[in-house]
Length: 307
Image 1 (cartoon, helix red, strand yellow):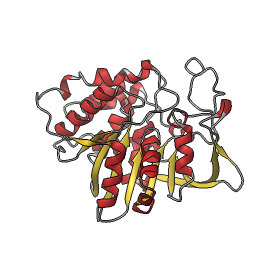
Image 2 (cartoon, one colour):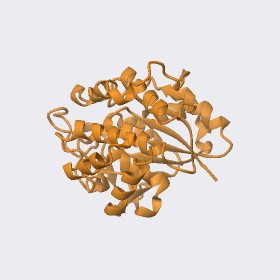
Image 3 (cartoon, helix red, strand yellow):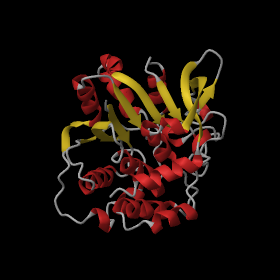
């Protein structure tokens, strides 16, 4: 049996790499990909997503543009990566895009796709939760069509990653996907949808290293490894982690992870807005707690050596 998935990403390097991994997974039926205009410039991110699907022969999968907006924009320094990726030669071998860009907004596409699905769908989200929250507001009935939300976001027992130079009023407790729109995170927290969260607590344990990029270089005769290596090389001057790639690996290899139950609340005001706070009698979530690092790296290297 295939797992039905709608993927919502926000166009950054790790989102594109997550897409690259998702498209290699067996027994996953991707009903559509939505691009949320957060950590990207939206036109470039849409182009990169569609070009990637074309490259991998997955141009039957529709792509939709979300038109939501957040509260705290990502820095332009981060967002420009989408413009660079859009010009990678490996993604520009053909002049005509085959992967369709649907006419509906991403949030409306999510509503319609969930309603038309034959069974409850997993929402895989590697950006802010604003598109999901907006879709729930458009039609609350879709809650019953969502099997679970797997989200890369939040920080539970570790500091956030919103730098003070970009957000001087933030106290350092928030993760960027949550900080972009904490109100949307809280809207999803108020639902009854099962939540599986990949927080900074676990992603901090999987940094992108020069050694790992070298491993990709050693198998660069595979197009997917070559593309992944280019993306990670673009990120290496920063402190960069396998945020979204780790989260999406859970869809296919949940056996590599342990989960831990937490009760939480979302802080939506003040200097801590965007913080996912552990509290008594809060909203129950399951968080990815540990991962087998060696098997995880072996897994993504193997998946990216298929094409």
